[in-house]
Amino acid sequence: MATEDEGVGQGCRSHMSLEELKALVDSMDDVAHIVDRDLNVVYANAAGRRDFGQDYGSRKCYQYLHARSDKCPWCRHQDVLSGRAIRFQWQSVVSGRTYELIDIPIPGADGRTAFKLEIAKDVTQSKMLEDALLDMSQRYRAMVENAVEGIFRTTVEGRFLSVNPALAHMFGYASVDELMAKDPMSSDIWVEPSQRVTLLERFVKEGVVRNHEVLLRRVDGSTFWASTSVRAVAGPGGGLGVLDGMVIDIDRRKRAELGLEQALAKSRAYFDLLAHDIANIITPVIINSELVMLDQDAPADARRRVAGILRQAQRAASLISDLRWLETVERLPEGENDQFDLSDQLPSVIEFVKAQYPAGSMTVRSSVPPGARVAGGDHVRRVLTGIMDNSGRYAKEGGVVVGITVTEARSGEARSWSIDVSDNGPGIPDARKGAIMPSLTSERDINRGVASSLQFYSLVLAHFGGSIAIGDRVPGDPDKGARVVITLPEAASHG
Amino acid sequence: MGKRIFVVDDEKEIIEIYAIILGRMGLELSGKALNGDEAVASIRGQPTRPDLVIMDHRMPEKDGLDVMLELLKGDPKLRVLFVSADLSIRTVAKDMGAVGFLPKPFSFQGFVRAVQDALAAT
Image (cartoon, rainbow over all chains, first blue to last red; front, side):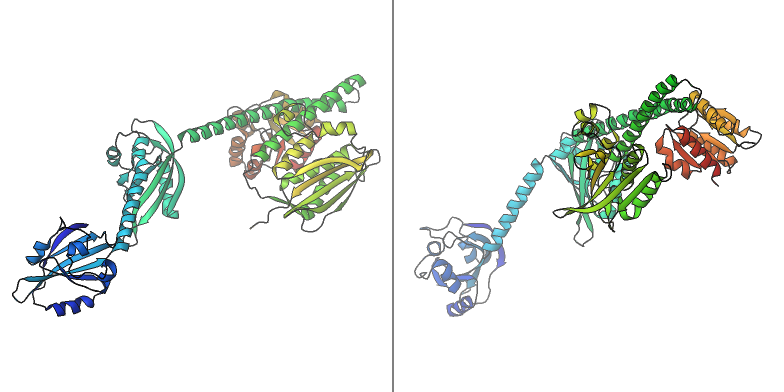
């Protein structure tokens, strides 16, 4: 079948004999035939015989080349006979290949066209490629047209070159043409001009912007949150050509996030207000109780009752402090990488705690291998200070001996450190162990009673991937002292 | 003669316990204020600079940090010890010129130590 035929001007003007013509045809790599005025195939070169068979003699061109019993309806033979060269594309049903074909009139001795030289260049490969590209282009276009995401192309100066229906729909326009008429940088579209500036700054700096969240305005004035991605497409000279972008409507998700953030901020503000005011309220309770306790003339019964008030007030103060601490830890950014160097910093913790008690009443023996660094930074200092302070506070008469042993603990590839703190104090009775250190694995656990400091330590350490366990210094004998074991992952190395 | 201390807090009960503890420490309560504006006016009106100002932060009219800045502008040598339940200002208060920060709630001994340290601070 032939397509897109066209005249390409006059043919050969000088006379050639058939033999000269055959020699010319034989020198060609492309398929070539010689056809006489009566449509008889006079000669086929090697490429022609390869594609259409050896037997061309005494056959009409429509028989040999087209496997037809009669003349082709698209035949332009008469045009060629009149001296015009014809070019067209032809897909052969005989060879199954596609050719770029040119028919050239060859004049005879009398000046009339004696033969038609037909040269067929095999363009099957390039035709397939062209068809594939066309198909891909059509599919790409269909994909863009039917996409749920908004897709656009603009000039560098900021004029829409194309937008898809989804983008027009996103902005509330009835057609893409209405949106096309808008300036993509105008305040009709951008609610916050600063977001537009930030987008452009990121684009200039990074050359591409991905998932930039912006607040946009619909044609009816309502707003919606969108995630935009833009990249530059180089122009013909290698410079900035056009900008291609995608817009995804993230309004529901973003508004839910913002709502959650606002709710969290409110909760934090309420918590802060509560903690602040309770701290102010219990300060006079603590000080006045202490003043009564210091008053040697106060009746013994009153002093005993006030001592109870003081203990509860101190407990409330400790609870507020621990809650505030936990809240601070929970707000630390993901991947917080502060470290606590046990070999370097543990001695200062020991000295600080010892200084809180009468000289000689606390003896500390510690063993820390060099290079023992754990995650958690200064929060680990606070945990260790608290644990050692417990040893001092509950010491038996005559003082307390605290042992601290740091050892490496490996679990597969992960390296962690175990900090074993034991004392020879009164220990923790078995019946109390569960109350001091319940599992705290759910909100229900947290809400079910007054939390101990160890529970807070557990939650703080868990934030850094650590854990805490309590037991007896001498296993099975709680009277011989308490033991607390902290496990923390090794600090990630800096830089 | 004992050192002269000026106290600022919007809670009367707190002012009252400051007075008791400072008295037991042998220090003189040179004045008191229940809000920020009153604090600025009263401290500026003192015949001599107090040796220490004990300052709350969250107060009506003007907060403690603003009061301290205003006072330090006129008298850079003034010593201010913050005593506050607002822990978020612990670092900034020191950065802005406070000689110390004592969080509320505090103990009798904790307060005594903080005041002694603040008076000893250069």
